[in-house]
Image 1 (cartoon, helix red, strand yellow):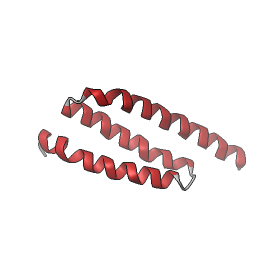
Image 2: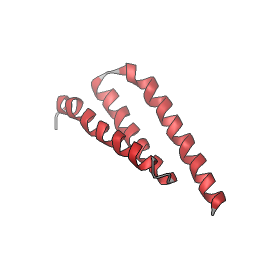
Image 3: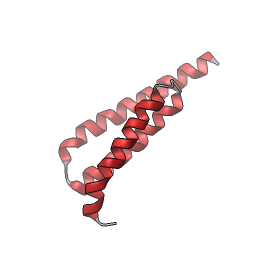
Image 4: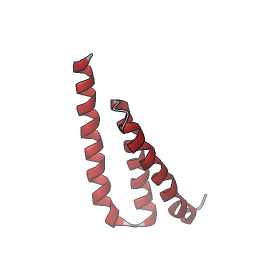
Length: 81
């Protein structure tokens, strides 16, 4: 697959994964936070390929939020068990 094809079609995959992420987070399972983390990896790749550096701050902060929530939800799940 060419670079231009990735730049063009990756946003569709990332959009689907974002929708899936919100869906599984609604199930209130700490493991659901892995979906946004995988999506963020794709965003970093896309940002680098496309040169759309304006998306980088959002990607960094959203990754931080997902990591924070993963640890927070995992800790709460462990305390409830």
